[in-house]
Amino acid sequence: MVPELIVSAVGAKLSQESGILELMNDLGETVALRPDMLTLGGGNPAEMPEMQARWRVATERLMADGDAFDKALSHYDAPQGETRFLDAFAALFREKFNVPITRANVAVTSGAQLGAFSLFNLLAGRTKEGRVRKILIPLVPEYVGYADMGIEPGLFVGCPGVITYPDPNDRAIFKYAVDFDAVESALRREDVAAILLSRPTNPSGNLVTREELAKLDALAERYGAFLIVDNAYGGPFPGIVEDEKELESVFWTPRTILFYSLSKIGLPSLRTAMMIASEEIVERVSAMTAILGLANNSLGQRIAFPLVASGEILDVSREIVRPYYRKRRADAIEILRRECARVGLDARLHDSEGAFFLWLWAPQLQCGSKALYRRLKEKGVLAIPGDGFFYGLAESDVELHDPDFERSRTQTLRISFSSSEAVVERGLRVIAETIAEMTTAR
Ligand SMILES: Cc1ncc(COP(=O)(O)O)c(C=O)c1O
Image 1 (spheres, rainbow, N blue to C red):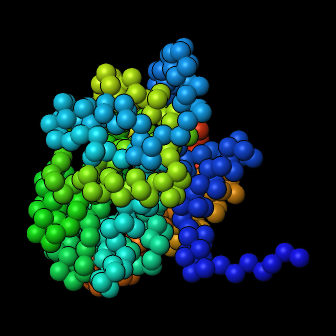
Image 2: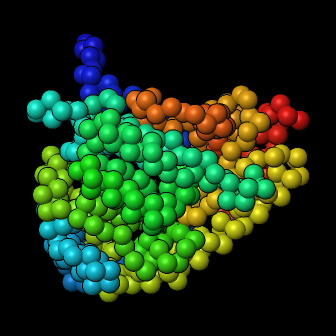
C-alpha cells in the first residue's frame, strides 16, 4: 500500500502553487507539447545566432583540449566553484571595474535562482535569538521568482513603486520610482537584513538610477543591512540595457551583494550563476550548495571560462547582446503601439530601459490580468499576468495611497520579446485584440 503523503509545513510551503511554478510549467509545456504556442511568457533568452556561434566554438575548444571535457563531465567541482573560473571571474571585476575582490568573494551557484534561495534564507527569517529578519524590496513590482523563496513565511517586505509619467502630458509611458519615505519607514519598522532589487527590473524593465542605488546603499549602511543587486539582465554582462554607460562601471560597496548569471547571455540550461559577496557570506552560501546540491554544473564554468578570462564576455555583451535586444525592444514597442491603435486600445507601457519584457498596463481591464492570461492561452498566446509580481505588500503597513497603483496590480501583463520576430508580432497582435475585446471601455 502506498502510504498517505503527509507533508511538513516547510514542504507544503515550498511545493505549493506559485507564480514561478506556473510560469516554468507553461514554458516547459509549450516547448514539449505545444510548439505552435506563441511564447511571450517566461524568461527564456533569445536565440541569438551570433552568441550561439560563440558558445559553440567555446564548447568545441573545450572538447579539443586534451581530457578537459572528460574531466568536466566526470568530476564534481568544489561547492564554491572551479578555482580557475573563480579566479578569472574575480580578476575580471578587479581589473576592469576596480571591485576589490578575490576568488574568496565569489560563489558559483546553480543559477541565480538557487543562489538567491540560499542567500535570502541565510540572511532573513528567525535568528537563534528570536529576531525576525526581513528582505526589503524597495520597488514593487519585482521578480516573481523571489516571491516564494522564503522557507519561513513573510520573508519579504515590499514598498510600492510610485507611478510617474516622464512626459506629464502623455500617459502612454509610465515609470515606477522608489518611494524613499516608504523605504525608510519600513527600515525603521522592520528588522531588515537586506534591501533587494533586480536591475534592470524583471518585470518592468525599470533601471533604478545610480543615484537611487546610492541612496538605497546609504540607507542600507544606516540601518546595518546589505544591498543585494541582481544583475541577471544588467551590466557589464549580459548588458541587456538601453544605457551603454551601464556596461562601463559596476556599483559596488562593502555592503553590496551582486548576482550575475550566464542564463541571459544564452546559457540558461547550464544553470550557472556567480555571486559576489563578503568572504563570510561566500563560505556560507558554498556550504549551503554542498547540502542542497553537492556542487554546481561544471560545464557552464568551463565553457564560459575563456570568455571570462579574456574579457571577451564584456565585448560580446557590448557588440552582440545589447544591440540585438535594443532592436528587438524598439520593434516590439512599435508593433504594440500600432496594434493598440488599430483596435482603439489606450494602454500604458512602462519605460523599457532594460531586460527583454514590455510591461503593459491596461487601465480599462476590469476582469483582471489572470482572466486575460487564461483567455490569451486559449487563443494560443502565452504572456504573464502581472499579479504575481506584486508581493510583500500585505506584510507592510505602508499605506497604498495611490489608487492607480492598487488598480494596476490586476491590470498588468508582462510580455517577453525574446521569441522570434514573427512570433512576437503575431502574439502582440492577439494581445491587443484580446484586451480590446475584454475591456468595458469599447
Ligand atoms: C531577475 C532575475 N533573477 C534571477 C533569475 C534566475 O536566473 P538563473 O537562470 O540564473 O537562475 C531570473 C530568471 O528569469 C531573473 O529574471
